Amino acid sequence: MATPHSVISSGELRSRLVDPDLTIVDVRALPAYNGWQLKGESRGGHIPGAVSFPAAWLESVDDAEVERLLDEKNIVPGREVVLSGYEADDLVVFRSKLADLGHTGVRAHEHGWLEWAADTSLPAERLPNYDRLVHPDWLSQLLAGRRPEAAPAGRFLLFHANFGVPEEYEENHLPGALYLDTNQVENPVGWNRRSPTELDAALRGLGITHDTTVVLYGRDTEGNADEKWPGRRAGQISACRAALILHYCGVRDVRVLDGGYDAWVRSGNPLETTRREPVAVSSFGVPIPQHPEVIVDIEEAKQILSDPDDAALVSVRSWNEHIGKVSGYNYIRPAGRIAGDVWGNCGSDAYHMQHYRNVDNTMRAYPEIAANWEEAGITPDKWVAFYCGTGWRASETWFYAYLMGWQRIAVYDGGWHEWSQDRVNPIEVGEPRNERVA
Image: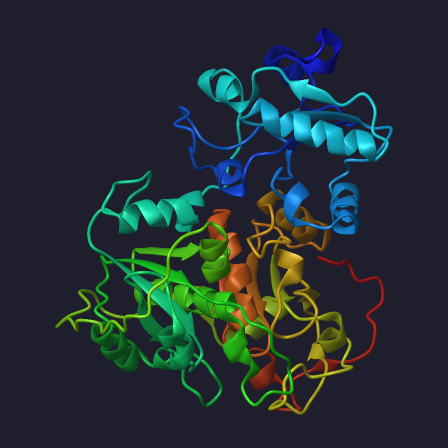
């Protein structure tokens, strides 16, 4: 049993929300932190300023990685730490782990999130569009015919998305899922989105109308950049790429399964091998595109570059791509970066997004993404366009900014592939001076 000095009440915790010497740790699953009401609480979200460290990671991640993550989130020995969550058992396990690592004075939030959520006088934060980032239990309920929180208003379709690997879908997939090949919505010459006429035909063929709720997921498998088509391994990036293009077209309710296929399997959910064919529809329902502003082309990219105080062209690429050590792709010869861009990072290479994801391949806690962007001068008051090689990684960061409620966000569709083809376009190589890092 916790001793009186080892707990902290909601009232005392509220008085210390701006205390720079205190780290509040939310140990619940990330969907709860983002805003989902997993225990039927009156409102979702988290205590303002709390960092997310799901207790489940203590069992699923090796000790060295746990220590790295604790340090990254400022959960360090000698610092005052308060743990908050749903279950007291989670707090006990977490406190024990911290004690083993030399932490002292760790306190528990006495009645946890359920009490905090019930008191509307206490402030709370959440991911603004959290319901567009769905979790496995939500999808399981939906597929079982139930009406989970933020259920679709009408019909819904589930898609297994990837780049030209139908055999992956045929091996197994989530129950009821259809197959979406990104080639259906992208032109393989340059990998930009297809024309409005082509997109209209593709979506009708997939059975998608503007008022269909579309849930997308991908399957991330091991691969390397020397394969002929390594992008086919980046399933979750492809799901985000499809989400961007569907939103561009005008699908009102597009959602992505956080963690994709892997998260579904880890949660103990079933798979199927039944190949399902879409039922075509006669009309998408509205003209395409409904949101042309979310994809910009080269002239708009140049406009953004000309206004660094109020706009940012953000490179979602690895450091080696950014400094021109590699192009990142076996089909792009020039290496370097667009002069005047802002480096937004991605991960190890053109097909991984570790910088934006957690150890379990889910979306990194959104305050951490926003803080990294702010440090680099990427802020929601600016016109922000993300770019990468051909628009895939940029689509994932666009989706995260969309979840955070940013209004003036886009993807520069041509990206480095288009920009580097014309040497008239200004290019830089080498390590930039005084660059802020996202």
